Length: 280
Ligand SMILES: [Zn+2]
Image (cartoon, rainbow, N blue to C red; front, side, top):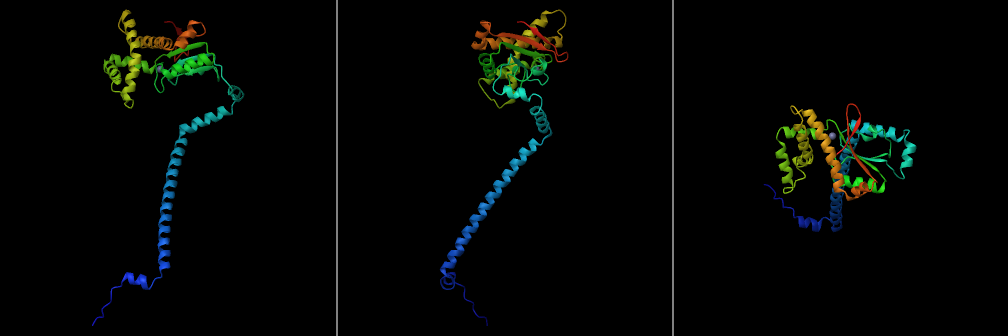
C-alpha cells in the first residue's frame, strides 16, 4: 500500500514557509545579478572591439612600409634641415610653382635641386597622372600666385608618361571611342564609384592631345613611329594643360597679362634628367 504524496502547493509554500522579505531579497538579487552580467558582457564586447581596433591599427603601423616611412621621417625630423624647417614654420615664399604628373620618378624638388619652401608643387589629379588640372589644382595655383608671391609657373610633363601612353595605346586599339563614349555618358549616368568612370574621364582629358599628336606625326614622312607619337602626345598634353590653366583661371590670366606671372611648359627626360622647355 502506497501512501499518496500530496502535490506541493507553491502558493502555500510561499504563504506558509518562506518569509516575504526573503523572497523580495532573492528577486532583487536575481535582477542585480542579471544586470551585472549584461553590463559585464557589454564591457567585454567593448573591450574586444577596442582590442580589434587597436590590433588593426598596430598591424598597419607595423607593416614594413609604414615602419620605413616613419624611420625616414625620424631621420628628417632630427637631421640638418631642422633650423630651416623651424624658420619656415612661420611662413613660406616659394619662388616657383610646378604642375606635374603623379609619377614617382618625377620629383620637382630633386629635379630642380630645391629645398624646403622653395617650390610650390601641384600634382593636379590625385592618384592619376598626366598634368590634368581640376578645380582644386587651379585654386592651389591661384593661392600660390596671389598670396605667396609665386612669379613663375612651370607645367612639367615627362617622357614615357604612363597616362599618356595608355591613351595612345587605347587609340591604337580603337577602344578609345568606347571609353570616350563612357565619359560622355557619365554626365547622364554619373557613377563615381565605377572605376571605368574615372578612367574614361582621364582618357577623355588626354584624348585631344593624342589626336593632335597623330595629326602632327601623320604629316611627317614615313610610317608612324609609336615612340615619336608618344613624345609628341606628351608635349601636346603639357601645352594643353598650360592653355587650360590660363583659360580657366581669370586670376592667373590677369597676373600673366600684367607681366607678374610667367607661365612655361617643359618636358623632363627620365633617363638624362634634363628639362627642355617647349613653347605653344
Ligand atoms: Zn606621367
